[in-house]
Amino acid sequence: MNRTARTQRRRDGEPASAEARAPSPEERARVREILARLREKYPVARTALNFRTPLELLVATILSAQCTDERVNQVTATLFQKYRTAADYAAAPLRELERVIRPTGYYRNKARAIKAACQKIVADFGGEVPATMEALLTLPGVARKTANVVLQNAFGIPSGIVVDTHVLRVAQRLGLTRHTDRDKVERDLMALVPKEEWIAFSHRLIFHGRETCRARRPLCGQCILNDLCPYPQK
Image (tube, rainbow, N blue to C red):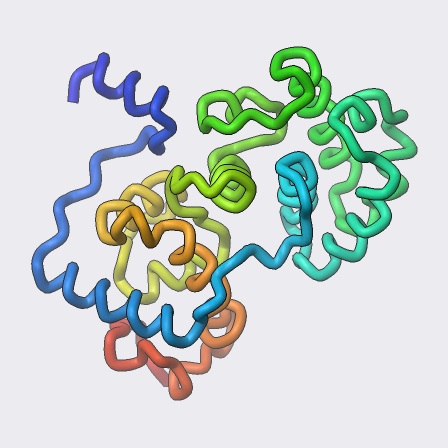
């Protein structure tokens, strides 16, 4: 791929990693069956984070790093009453913001990221969270995973596949990727999964990772994907 093409891919919001190899017909058939079983098991596919606006989802997603969604929802129930606009966060005293979000952990870094991101939203985007990958990635504290979460759940845009720790683990165990770099994992999954399934697939793999394919002691004997999975089973 030439330099111009690589640059265009980044502008279009695709992960800037090596090109994924084309999947074989057998791989595609296996993925179709995986998708069908996950769809049946988890018919409702949505984020567990509570939000009403793109801004609330952006803030909640930043807070969710190294924190459970349940804890984030507890914190944002108060946070979203106190701060309602990007300008509110941009003007908030840092120590005050830190105090409110402290239960989510890493609160100093998260407070700085939220405040800086909202300052840029106010300065460059008229106070509204932008709805493109390119623009979201200019916000402090926002990497591709966070941008994907916002675009997919707040705007309904299939911008890619969210690769969190659950998606990374389950995709590797299922043999859908050999990579550990999240951009490369996302590229592999995007090549295997039809675009219209990208948003729901992320949620369903997260649900499956939490419920069955756990980091420790995965419940292989209860897994709906047992016969399709090459992961060593005990």
